[in-house]
Length: 438
Image 1: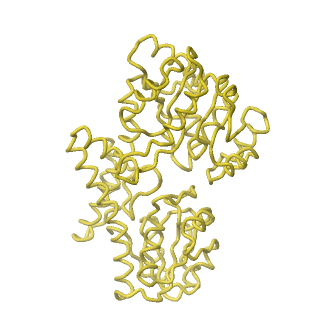
Image 2: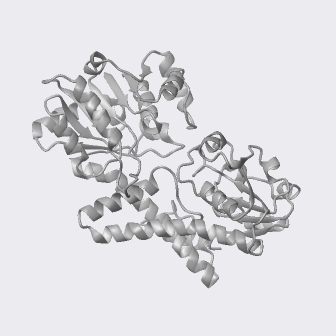
Image 3: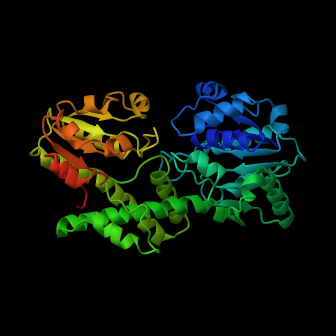
């Protein structure tokens, strides 16, 4: 089929390449000339395992191309348009900024003729009511389906080609819903043939699924971090606690690791967007819960800074500090709302001489935090440090030999803000080890 993907950032670039790999002819549309130029050469503008190879194969194979300025004829010839633009947090509050979504809709409305029957598929994370608004705006030109994404950074290609569920938010009118479903089923035919669960629902439910899922995960993280505070006060170990309760199949072990908290471009934004939606619909209980989740998460960053101050006697002035990690999570170069960079900035503001080490995110750090000292080699980054903080659990940091690390630092003090290191091994090598809630 002839597809377009409007918005070729993290979500859109992956989706476009994945759809081309299923055999469709895909046109990627984005307003950023540099991004389009890179994608047109098969180069991923961000770090995502497996994406460069997928992009290169599809661009070279002729099924995938990118542009900043599609002609009306090109748009009108496309059967299915995916909207994958960003919906960042609004400057006015927690709600999502829909300006890019509306720009994409106007692009389509101006190019699709009356009586056209294209399908417009929303992938972006939006508040309730957006799909209906788009459907009304494009009435007579296209049907609308809301099809939320559930990508995990570091696993985005796999999650697109082999998702754990596929959700369609369909129009109320039965015939319109049926026609839209049949077209999107054709797009996703290879995925549906795998037996991936398909959920057919209304617009509002589909719009809520992504923010509900992310908010639930965020709540789980904040719960175990709140328990970490109790464990510290009571002399318990939150890692053993999490292991014990995680064996309950109703709870599970995932997202039960206490530490510096969550960040990135999704969880913080989505809990605030859902909180704003809850307030708009007078769902005060949900709004209050999500506010607490956010507060607990932010407090973890302050707690790590407090631990650093405790280890240097309350004064960080001119203390050499090495931060292991800049990305908000391993296997990503995404530093949006990164707890690691937040802590690094706070320590720097308190007078510390901070060096940040990360295997992939430093080029992004150079653009977003140019004042931060950067070092890609972990051994060089450790030279002369009086305090080391593990803030992103990259494999090369977790697997670091504590005896080797000890040979390069000025003081053997480590704060494991991800509870990812082996305390016995580090203490055995002479380090003063501190975790979170241990």
